[in-house]
Image (cartoon, rainbow, N blue to C red; front, side):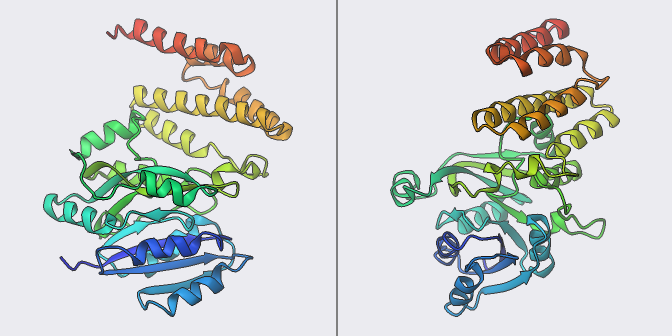
Length: 337
């Protein structure tokens, strides 16, 4: 088993974390890989630290570009990758030492085009303590085989199996690049770019192997992209575009039930973000989210959720009661058990 794996790592101002990230790859039990580091216009010492690491291991390949965003950085990595399999790793995260070996072994045994693992979150303040207490010594866990149809049902139904993330996975290159189509991330999408990328792959169809072993270490810190409010106040940016695109495509495909699920997920996310913005005293973000909610309520598709949501968005105590009422109402209307 000597298939080449390309690990694509986009970086932006991660000088405090990138060494740990790279070391987690260099310490893999499987040796046949290349590391593609794409610096997306960092303004700190990320690049210099990577140059020093490259001198220690010739499997590291360095690339630099002006600030274009994570989508363009990942696209650059895919364009330059030489491996038969791809792994996407963020510059502040880490991998279990046996991640490459075990996921590739499973892919070769089953013929799966994608192999996915679980993840756990670690805080920057207690990183070593949390790694030692959460990182499994071995890689023994339960494996689940999923057909293309099962993958589609889980994705459309918003059943969380990590299908909305491009990380935590070993992906066969032929799934992303074939004679029919080459898949890439769409530049300019500020949030959920990996969800949309995964959505296109799900529509194409692939079989997947899934393990409950938590072999991806997701680092939590204040600079993480998911913790910033910038994307909610930038002009011309739509942080909920991905949800609406998937909803609308499901509606166009005649999958009304799936479209309704994604509409509800979109509304719930709006409500959750509004709660967090209010907690953080982000008044401009709150107004932006309220306007988004007003526009959402004009949708002609799902009147039942509209009534419930108009109550819960502006009245926090009614949020959980409203959510329970909405799901109960759906079951009654559809005659579900």
